[in-house]
Image (cartoon, rainbow over all chains, first blue to last red; front, side):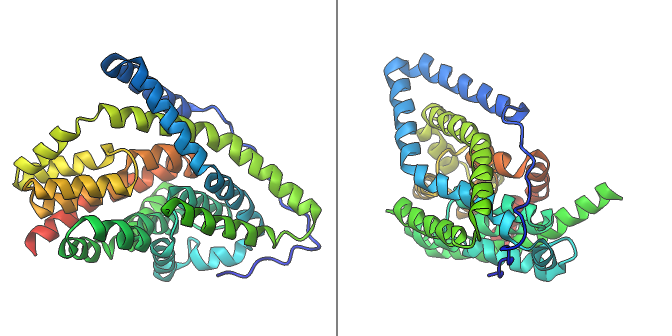
Amino acid sequence: MLSLKNTEADPPPLRKPRKVVDGSLLVLLGFTLAGGLAVLWTSGLDRTIEIVAETFRFIALLTPKIAAGIFIAATLPMLLPRDRVGRLIGRESGLRGLVVAAACGAALPGGPMMTFPLAAGLTLAGADLGAMIAFISGWSLLGLNRTLIWEFSFLPSDLVWTRYLLSLPAPVLLGLAARAVMQRRVA
Amino acid sequence: MNILIGTVLIGAAALWLWSYLPNSQWRHASYRASLDTFLFTAPRVLVALLGAGFFAELLPEDQVRRLLGAEAGITAVFLAIALGPLTPGGAFVSFAIGAAALKAGAAPVAAIAYVTSWSLFSTTKIFAYELSFMGRQATLVRILVSLPVPFAVAGLAYLL
């Protein structure tokens, strides 16, 4: 783990506020409304209300996790020393940075509520897109927690091993591809 | 149970981070930033999870299993890859469907393609979390470079 900045003397960094309502939220809202209407049409009002209630129960269950995840996402970039993060997993970090990022992703135990805030925080702290894609892919393809707890309980182990070993190089390759794409955009 | 363990882990990480905030000025700035992030994230997570709930209801689960199970070969693999992103819910759901398809006679290659495709392109993850936190450009680049992965993994698994 990185050592954190000695911040006693410095003031906290400022943040730019983001727009809450934008295109992606409206598209999402459209899909959800369409889905809700379709359920209302096919399964009736009772079932629709039941699904909404189920979702809110699930959200209530997730709330402590979401709150902690949001706090981490907002606070981590304030505390992480930008130059060190940049050297470790920034644009110039090379293959080693991608391997480090992919391994961190695979070792990360949480769900998406942990991973994406962390990736966003690391981006603000100086990680490049290639490393973040290696990190996210490492988590989604090679996450140890999910494979050990869920995948091996449901699927035959030879199939799990085949999938896991074949996916092993993917996060680093995807990070390299993302860096190539971004470089072409800049050039 | 899994949610509880995750909550404890992520809560401990948050407390550990909080302990590094040196003084009240920093703590205040951290709370402000957290509130900003909350206002941005909360509506997205709420709307996306509601949407996931609705689409789970609409998806004909029996038919999904039958199609994946009945068809072997390349069509099943393509179908499996297409179905991956549409699977709502968490790892639990996708592994359960994969296992059910296998039992119904699906080729293992199709199951591998399905799980890989779900891992990379689950629409729940993308819409509820990735777009909210990473933004449109980063998400698009990741999806574009990842597109060949399920095909490559399935192809290699087929050769093995």
